[in-house]
Image 1 (tube, rainbow, N blue to C red):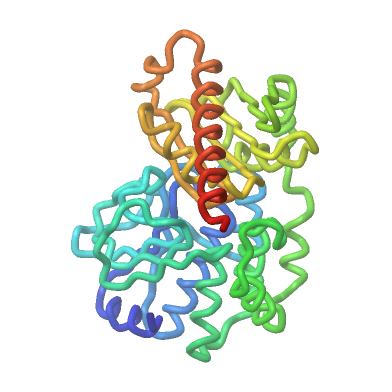
Image 2: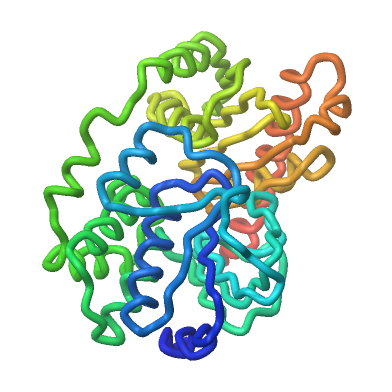
Length: 334
């Protein structure tokens, strides 16, 4: 879809760009990039989200690139008539709060779990949402400022784990496009001093509690910590040479939050967590990474031993997915 069509839809409206809750670098970069794109074409927009920004690395990103985002409670004067563009997220997903405005557009790279009607929709299976926004500048010959290009480049690098996870040709093409426009010193600065000392407690808890069953690693964090940190620790556990699937879950104020990583092609991480959590909560994501939540109200469904219930549920679905993949492989053979 032509991104200039989005400009026409949004003109003469009050516009908000909303990320998923607890936004990560790719979501923030995408929102910031889109804000810059729209501003050049005469459409001002305000960035907003629900949840908290409590990770040092995310706070540093906002400061480094000069990005202003408003939390749900601080969003200025949103009404039912205002337009919302969802980036790196989709309406009705569990990680997106339904704000009062009208979600008229969606730009995302996650699988579609709920079919929604938007006036503008750009949902493509790429490694990062940032590369979609970068393509808007390239395809329309819209000038891009060095700070904006740097933010989008950082978003691409982070969501693809430096091109080792879910990377597509568009991700690499857009990084090449951004490289010649970006202030690369800003990108480099984001890799220094981004871990807080208190993060070590979460790493320590995960290491202490890790259990491995046939190359599937489970780790439990028994206290509240930032959702972004849970995802980072799942990457850390996946780096073990005896782990192909990492399942990290942490006790949060609102329930149990999950982060899943998979290096096994038959095991689609998003499908895995969606199937496992269906009786208790919800989840979804990409083939290699996904997340989900069991709300506090449903935790009693896990029984007295929540760890055994969680582990058994994941291992059973993994076994089913492996058997299905094997059966499909045998069927395809001549």
